[in-house]
Length: 416
Image (tube, rainbow, N blue to C red; front, side, top):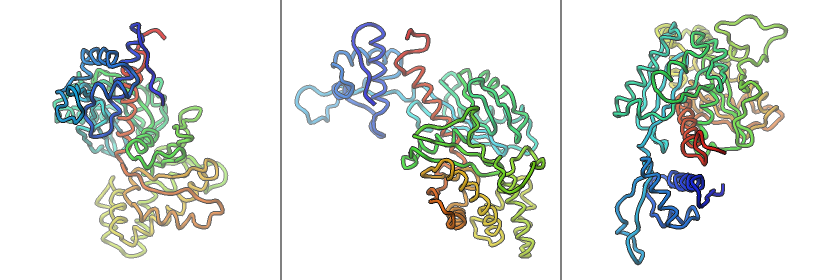
């Protein structure tokens, strides 16, 4: 994208300052400063115009002048160095799932400076979930000395169907106590900064593409696979949301029954009822029973509400009964991939969420069950961020909002 610059008038000076700041923030990783001359050349402005912009940014605390570059080999006076003060503010990325809450704190360059997580009980209500999230945020901030006054923006991802514009969770069968505006309202009160709410899988998709350069394809689908199943869709390089922001709710695919679907626990859709966490545990229990594998049965029983994690651990350990269970649900899951392939034809399908822990074992099973399909199938990979993808996507959104509202060409409230 061409850098937009201008000269003269207060508005044009703000345009130039935004261009200078954007260039400083975009410096290659590891390069903490640039010379004023190099910055002027990069943005296509005179040294005087850049210096005026830098002075304004210094006054705002976003930039600082460093020492003269006396190590430079060029002739003449040493270059004046300047750097973006990434520590001038911080953003939060937050994630809520039926199993846990996760928090990540980052500076304005997107570098994560602290993180935290806390398990949730199976019967945690909406208020308890929010309190757990806020206490996790408090511990995370305390670990770095950052206060709520240093926070510029926070974004949070949850399961279900949400209205980002209104900050409302419209439907969240797995955590019904969070429905409505409770979460955003309490976070805004406690944090004192703008708070954005979005579907967790959509944020996870953005986080995966952001943190992994090899995942920045213009056509991919990221499927969160755990207790529930949902997908984030990227078409032509953009996240596709659909008419009501719930495109990718593949858990409600019905591929296995005829006629009306029977009611399912916690509002599960037909597809996730057949491939989700509860079914994986059921299949593993049945396979362990057939194999007289008392050790695995005991592990599953002892794990209680964390039985899925126990089964996935057994898959990673290569235990036959657990592998048999994964093969059964992988065969069913492959049918969902064929539907996605037929409609969207993505280059890549990324498996995220708890099942990503199974790695190549899971991918091999999926590829085997897809091998006989008449259409060429997309490449399959597991998430590199796994269960942290949501908080990274939330961080990215927070930084994008700061870019738009505080570092953009027109500041909030300005004309234009």
